[in-house]
Image (cartoon, rainbow, N blue to C red):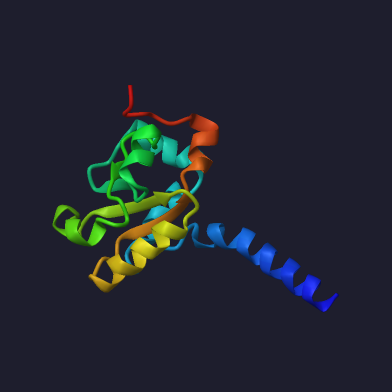
Length: 137
């Protein structure tokens, strides 16, 4: 009985963990929280700002199949080699499948001195309401 209870608790924690990072910001990223809701992110997609990038850290194949319009793809496995393409002055809204991978990338960015970011979490929150764009034909 005790093992069953423990297993149930672990399963619940695992199910809740992926979304735990939504809204996590760097020291200079608090202004990005205004885009945390899908409707607000849609406003940014419709009227992009040059100082804010939506960054999808999923693998290139997943990105090509569907992503948030205007998003840039910096796969998590390539991010450290591509830091030269990401100015530290840029505001970054990080997305992925669940938010967990984005948080792993954010930890790397923090160590590299980035402070202007937010973990938006699962891009499916956007897809469910507004759909996605595809780079495949």
